[in-house]
Length: 365
Image 1 (cartoon, rainbow, N blue to C red):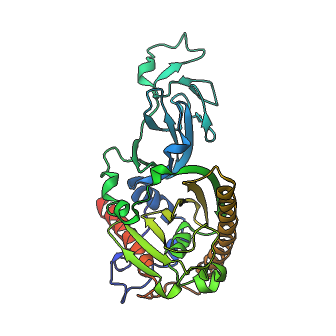
Image 2: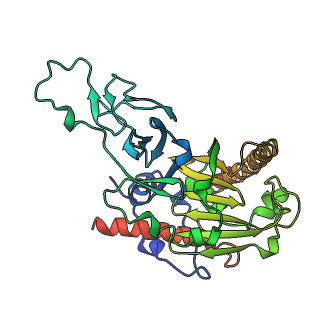
């Protein structure tokens, strides 16, 4: 892999009051894509779903992590496993979408695996020599569960997931995510670099200008940001007006976990966002919605209102992010400065990104 030539001064972590934003090249140069896969996505916990999506043996979900296909499945003993969604024969997929299967069968040549990943059926291999099925099980991945949320890690011996989410459960108590039920997934594709979308999520600076209807739901003057080791939190006190969320008081908590996972929390409701890079100027944002109450007619109305409002806000975010990408590619902008009052979480994200790049580049010297 050819790594981009980054000047040491661009990797220095500087206090927000004195820091520049990262250079525009980081959002448009294709050379950063392989570096990010290895130095960022390949060494961080990646959110892939919720236990309520795989309640029974054979239920499975699929994901893409650092351009690698991943399969999560519940086995007959109740355990949830994560594997690369890659057949050991010639690389075909075991599953194309979330679903259910009693056995995992390659969609290319029909090799069959048990739900625990062991190879079972190998059509037309009777004459193959020196072949032992025990040597060709699916390749496992590290899987961790936190409050029902499922995360995978590509590294063989990662730091415990709990070290990255420390303090979150206490902050949002008594609400717990494992009490919620998965309702829907909605994907959006944005014609911008994934970091543009993350930067936009991490500040309320743009909200009065881009989301006037959303802004009216919050006490914007009391909006605040908190920064921790591996995550940041934006707190939006509700203004007391009627909202599409079914609540009008309390706080909305917007957590961001480095590098690409967002948890949007309101009483009885969780919305997760995962930002997946697709190309230097393109990304996919995977929204998953979870609710404590889903059966009653009133709950279904709240869910549909929430989904519709979220879709409208997302359309506004996509438009501004794509316009920002155009500005970054225009050649007339390189870098800017941060508002210490409004953009501390953006600065925190970009500092962690610099650290990841610096550590990877130093390891190659």
